[in-house]
Image 1: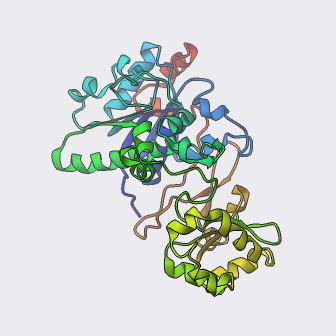
Image 2 (image 1 turned 120 degrees about the vertical axis):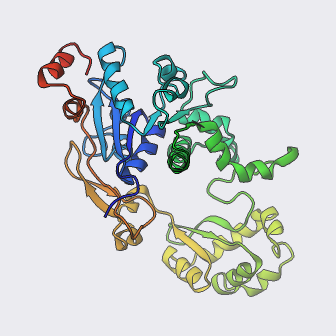
Image 3 (image 1 turned 180 degrees about the vertical axis):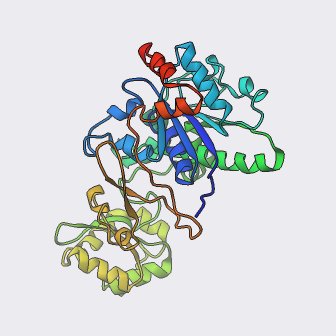
Length: 393
């Protein structure tokens, strides 16, 4: 079956996570993604670690289904190749250092007249203007600037997200912005410019705590893995030393929790706990009562009681256990993809669609497709070898 982005060509000057995550999702939907890398080492994310059968965990995650071409963009011959690639592209994505693409003549303004249907997506830390435009931006720094660290962690210490949440947010908004621009181009016949900043993307995801602190109000406190304002909602240890995650959302569930899980129905009407605001304020008194009840049970017994009471709950899994999660396995969400290190398991993109299958092609070697792409652009073998000798590709 055909895919939604079949026939769409994306050229990406990308590294690290934000732009590669965006373009991998475009590739999932059928787009041809040509990834421009530096000759030799390629995308520096290839060297972050060697945890995926000798390959970088970051790189494997966000770079399947792409074609890799190596170009030394400091050389005129390589820039000429890039200009030819852009001329045949529908989308140009870049997350180079601030101002680098514009200095190479690859800004939307520089390209729009010659390529009126081209969509240009710039991904940066802070956006294409403003006082922070030229400031270096990495994921943890944006987590800090966006206030994320102020609401994540324990009362005594802030904590970063365990994954690259600012990069992921920016990549998601770049992805959806490009899809919207492609739809708009169908109506207008013209491309557009998309300026995505990591700060604004993560700022959007901070909407609840920002409104909670609206007008100078007290912000939500850091409470580790527990919810900052709803209680009980978080991790509780059972008698076997394992932890159960549970969450109550309303007073009806609180009564069921007391009756069927704690086996203390009278506790539901205790004036210290008979509304969420009171439970939240009196956590220090309520938590020991819950732990005492759970202490006589294993984690699985606690979960069984929570299930019977229809109280939301979850196992506290390690990332290693997610590879064998029974729900993901039952839905056959893992498939093999090829790589320079051999087949690797990959999680299918979220969203089962009955009209097409996601593209799940190989993770490329550095420059694996350089020769084929140059041939497509009209270079013969002698010309390609000359480019290689001078280090342009």
